[in-house]
Length: 389
Image (cartoon, rainbow, N blue to C red):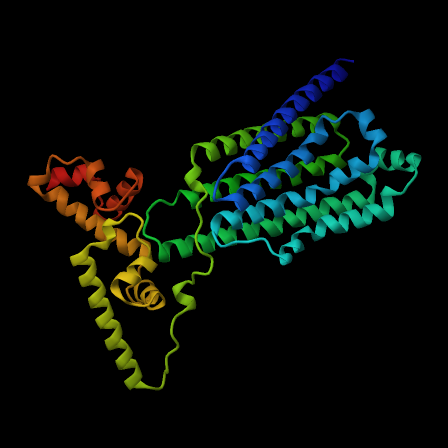
């Protein structure tokens, strides 16, 4: 009897945490659907993710009598699990790339959901109530649920790889085309993807307990998972509300320098020499322009803007910096900013300027980024460098 009371108390705690997670998720989803913003698609995809997530999570506290009176609704709710991670993947794409649009091809991500419902139509939806009760009561031992759990596990593995490949592409394009040292978008998306996929992999491990005859262990595993879900949901909400700038993307049509390198005629020495002369002249022109006009003082400088200023096609400029100078545009510009900051810190006439004033003057917009890059180039903090000068 004591054990039964203990299990009931744990079930109550589980229901409370689940209810809080669902409430917070739906509240944020409502906000994202109604708020006026330029990031409508990203917000709606995120809201869709939260709604499907809440539908899955709501199963923990649904009344058993309600389920037995609406079996088809419960079976359909199970199938919506197959939409959670695809919705998150599409959200990642929409945040990373400003030109992302939903297309017919993206319906491919709904195939597991459609297949699951097709199987349920054949095996579940049209059964009589007695057979549905029998299926529901013995669901953990039936092949349909084995197959469904296996499919969800494979989905987690596939999309975890896909999401981190998207983030890798985003980071590479960002570094080669943008000079703003603020990488909070990448860091945020990387953090939330890492946390969520750790959670999903833990859920795979937890589901193994479903097939072990240890009810108490299964319940406590659910409690721990639900606590993590609630914590992550609240963190996600607070982060999103406190940092709206995280939802700014880049153009996915931008290419990496390695993908646009001009093809050379390996057999023509004359062509090679001519190309080398052109490259040398362009590098000289670029460096003179950077030193004289100081375009890097603009904190939002992009490779497209620099291309317009210096009259070198953006493709050529990308190859020039990322391949021939062998620096990301990101690092190339920041090196000039650091050199400018070093000159100011050494100048006794500007000793009254604070480090914060200097970092804004040279084109940085984040103290942490400035300190990181300054130490990278000088091995000293800005204050230590000024004292040593």
